[in-house]
Length: 224
Image (tube, rainbow, N blue to C red):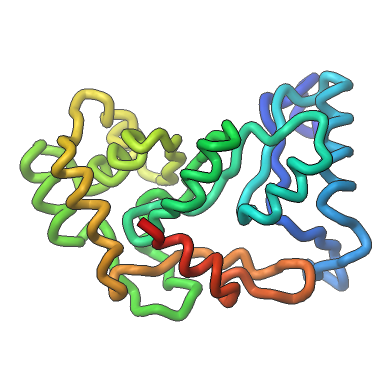
């Protein structure tokens, strides 16, 4: 990997899924022969060798991070997960704060172009009335308000755009601040069940359990 990147090291390497997969005739299939602790030990070895500077996880639930914390020499510095007002991840944020693991939000705008993978009705958080109203009050875009909401919760956001103007806009979120009332107003959005969905379903789990069918994980994402 480093040879391909023409680098001596990378700043951070994440375990992308809490389940190993391999290429089977062009399709990625889960396999159970490799366990999470095995992969984590390998990442620790890369850190020891100076090939990476930090290691973390992505799409991990609390029980899966617990499995790492029970055996690791070096704990994850990051859990990269989907976080936005329609999938606020309150319990996961509390858990990560307790264990000094930083949360990075992918799909922080709710991936408005994608159909929700959990089968729910599509709702665009950037068109949500409360978000739009708050954006107008600050002379900002709805996207900037949603990003700022996560930033004020201590979450790093990594929005994606192919349009240069929107890339610039994504950086212009540090010259305003949401009030406590506005933060609560956005928090309240997901109290309405119709405003709850995730854009990406980390489907593969050891044992064949789909993440969104894991009732506790699905419910806890909306625990206030």
